[in-house]
Amino acid sequence: MTTLQSVPSSLGTHPAAGSNPSRAETREQLSKATYDLLVIGGGILGITTAWHAAQSGLRVAMVDAGDFAGATSSASSKLLHGGLRYLQTGAVKLVAENHFERRAVSRTVAPHLSNPLTFYLPVYKGGPHGAAKLGAGVFAYSALSAFRDGVGHVIGAERAARDVPELRTEGLKAVAVYGDGQMNDSRMALMTVRAAVEAGATVLNHAEVIGLRKNDGRVVGAELKDRTDGTEFGVSARLVLNATGPWVDHLRRMEDPGAAPSIRLSKGAHLVLKRTSPWRAALATPIDKYRITFALPWEDMLLLGTTDEEFEGDPADVAVNEADISQILDEAAFSIRDQQLSRDLITYSFAGLRVLPGGPGDTAKAKRETVVTEGKGGMLSIAGGKWTTFRHIGRTVMRKLAELPGRPLADDMEPVKQLPRHMPLPGLANPHAVEHRLLVDGGTPGPRMAADTARHLATHYGSLSFDIARLAGGDPELSTRIHPDAPEIWAQVVYARDYEWARTADDVLRRRTTLTIRGLDSEDIRSRVEELLAKRP
Image 1 (tube, rainbow, N blue to C red):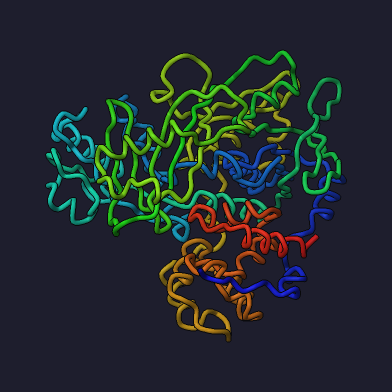
Image 2 (spheres, helix red, strand yellow):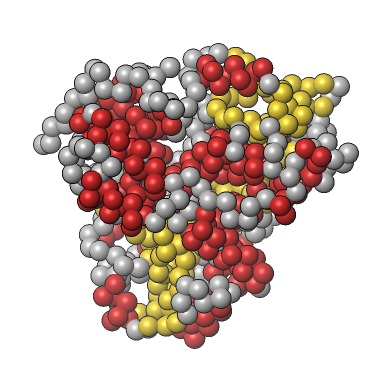
């Protein structure tokens, strides 16, 4: 059994120079100012809106009852993709737009937080699609990306099995190949929060809305409660935007108790497993005419999913159950050998809720479109959409703000067409160059950094990795691993606390690092993380 070193009582006692304001300072700032826009909800829809609104010159505040990206936005399939299945419905323009956004994010906006991923789409005897159809589909898919990720084509089973050793080859006729991308959604969201703050936004997580401020029936702000200490305070704003995801109708009913439901929810569950062999490609296996199950190499693990079923309960109660686990493993078994699907390999499971436009029909066939509505009290509500197009969603909301009746904000904001088209996220750098620098000198006079730690930092922080390396160099204890089987070091916990708004162990272990998804967030580690977090007000 590996024994972890204890964290010295002096470790991380004081906030780092230039760190974020304390929660008390942020609450005071929020309560004293009148903002142009108050964004309620810190998932990616709220985050991208705050980022674009701050870029446009508006005075912006953003709050969330939990952590930033603490719900659905950190429970995605971690993909930046054009949406191959949309071709079946004839949504050619949508796929092309998705590809444009995917390429922009992965190549210009955040190449340090994303990476290309080759997909293999296996064609089995008796499957829902034939090789010719899928071959034509992946060719058209790559054409809509202007062949910038290669030409979609078909390969034989033997070659595919060399890249994916756990691929089931019995009955395998051919494999269609195409390119997309992936990311760590939590890290992408946090970097976008940071971009919003650098553009001038004021943000606070773990701040629950307990009521809306109204003036002559119009929503002009919100009353909040800091969940970390119970402090209550208020925020005033000329316009309030409801971006609370699965809770969007809950907030709409605060504005108007008679508001009719505007959305429906679809549950998507995922499993994370240890890999039994290297994977050089991902699998996208057709289950039926519309559904695909994914097997994705991600964070040195294997990510399986997803389910798609209507959800009608309390969004706070969404969780992976036994039926989800069985479904995911059974569907994965169409194309993956049994030894890779042992339940003993599961390290983590998670479920999120897709927000879909209200109405009848199969959720698997529903469009992932964004809907913006205005309530009786003037509060805007935004719901739906997909991770890949988060920048496009931000621009869409800005256009809506500029076109509101009476144009209350139009004169104070920069037109959308004049905003930078490809504003990068913080830390923009070539991750390979950053990794090399970290390996050469670590950015510090301290001990040489391990190769897996350097690679992890470079691909999760970009050039901001050097700030973490300097923290580690200033205190040798911070350069040690949090767990011997993970690349993260203790300096990341201090960095998450001082620069990334982390307040709880889950904030750090589930979203700022990968300890939880690796199944390594032991009680000992959690208590030491909490000890470090408590050293900053």
